[in-house]
Image 1 (cartoon, rainbow, N blue to C red):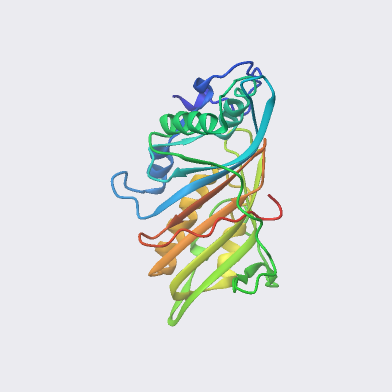
Image 2 (cartoon, helix red, strand yellow):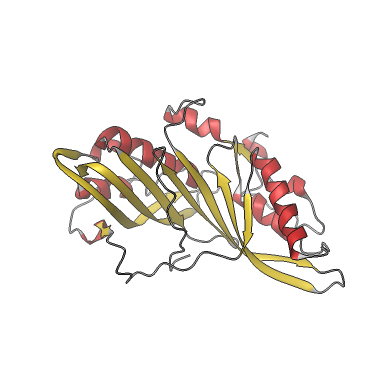
Length: 274
């Protein structure tokens, strides 16, 4: 489907009945081609985990059922799903009757899998909130650095550096990631977690690099893939995991994760800002 027909940024009639045709798939290949990522051999594994906070349908007697859901779209599906179209699709279920919650879950999973071009997992409920005081999380907050930052108008990978003489295995976090929707220009806010092993990454350079996205236009998933590719190329880690937790919009938040093959998926959590 051509991007100029995307529902995001346009006035769209509120759906009155179930319509899986509302889902708008966007080919991942277009964004990856721009990043030089080979279609047949992406350098990462991963998924896009969506949290849906506004979900409802009718039981067989017409009584509304409300739920939340976690939707997991594998990164190797040929398409991502545009966020406003997903919101409209979920709202199209509001007047649909299902014999049981499992029937609603299965319908959503089937429709999303068809749009994405691969198996999408759907589970009712949401991951727990992240505990910022958790003793078992030894992540380093790079935002506490007192540094000058003057690059804000687009990703600047030249800011990234690492020291091969200082091997490390650590997790670096920042709450300062911001980019803009490429269609509406509206701001997208996120925290990002970068777990790696290899030459120690320069923390000041990493923070400056993340802040350089501040005026960048890009979809959430593509921003995370760009961050992964730039850190991999410039810092040469032997293991790398990049997860961004974007704040909610339209009852949905998106949490893309990309990692070197063989890396375990991070434990699903939600941030306070979500």
